[in-house]
Length: 301
Image (cartoon, rainbow, N blue to C red; front, side):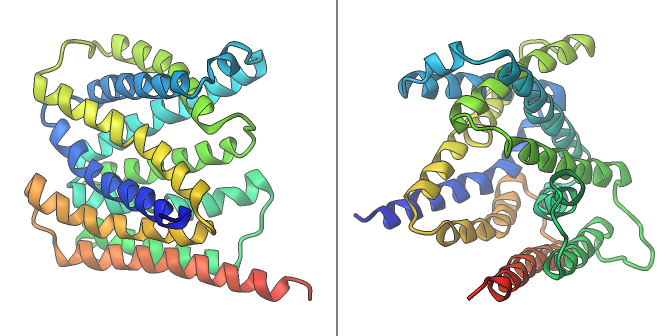
């Protein structure tokens, strides 16, 4: 089997697992509060990442980390897992999964916006077109197609879902300045994030033994949303001849997610959700294609 075929296998496995997590969020929140789900899921994730670090013989990198690297891990841990998943889980608690998942998927558009002031990048025609299409899709999903009335099913839930995209984009922007091994950096940020999560859970009085279905759900989220999928995706990118060959697989995730939401969560997928998701995906594709075309035109020779 060629490395490219292995890359496709790892990439498809990642996409398939990512497609199930929206359903896992919603089911787990039937038994746990957002803070409770965050605590137990991040605990599972930290344990899994720690095991990977040990298996790969990278413990010395953690022990020899500088105070600057630990401070950076504290910042990253504050953003992810603490703030990002706390906000995201609350959004899922307030919204149907079929609304929260596509809205959260606009984080790539938010990343393009934030890269302008934080990374000094320019916003191009592809970014602007993608933003207009993507956020039009958000409005369609949030209002369930009642565009003129602007009757949002849960304004605060939509707000939180959009805020989660900002936090996730900030996390990846600050990640670009990190030269450590990705697995080591992720483990350290989750270990630091666990401090914030534990303090918050104690402060709100939400630290108690969960029912076993909730614990199973948290374990699934911690393993397949926060840790194992990250490792699989890195493996796919590393083995691929060209990252574009596997990165486009990510567009399969939202439609698959809606199928799982329908069968596992029991939600009836509306035409407005499908139309809005179509606009979001079109916006992401247009953003990518137009920006790539501009880069080819500007390339000398």
